[in-house]
Length: 322
Image (cartoon, rainbow, N blue to C red):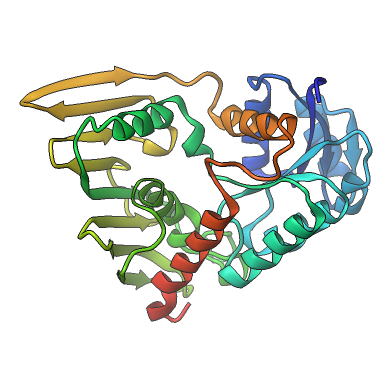
């Protein structure tokens, strides 16, 4: 595949707009189609982003022969059905995080992708940012020795809207699925997805969703991940990685990091790694690379890890009654 990857976007919300903007900075990618549930929203999105193919149904989008890959940007509870629809029509899928609302749904989507032999990836865009790529290089080179502890938080304060996706249980509301997945995925990228002990606690809001929570993961070698998230409390939004010979801080906001602070041997240094575009372009470029190489999943965000993360999310929130 040498021509630009032709993208379609399923859904027209805010995250869809962010991805559309990101595609303008992605190498060898072109936004050609959008699918909505109504003609007016598809046309409005198409006008804003100069999209030529505008579909008033998701079924019409997945049937578009001019589309190679589809970004699924709908709310969490619809990811499973939307992704399977795309896969069954042979479209490569980049599904917004969290991948689904639970591990059972995640397994169902992955099963279809593998049976069909079609590319599928969770849109954990943070993993592809230059600062995070550099972080992995530093850790692999033993820059701070053996990693012993990770601290990560992602919290912001917003007003309660019982009908909004953050506070409506029917829309998969709550801090854990919305932003807690960032902290958990970051820790898993470094320490893995197989902790030997998981503990958690949460503050449940008036609409029944988790408004803030903290979770602790202990690994087989004694390593710890101390993580938290919130939608009613603003936090530092940093990742701090502590090793036997030093530490690295992924500066705030870590989910779109542009700098790292490294402390070792009594000295401190800073690396600036600015984004090109808004950052969503990097995950689109990873999809393009995989498709050109004939791969059906990414080695950076493999499907087995996506499923393991969903199982961890289920385990974390089980004591909360969610």
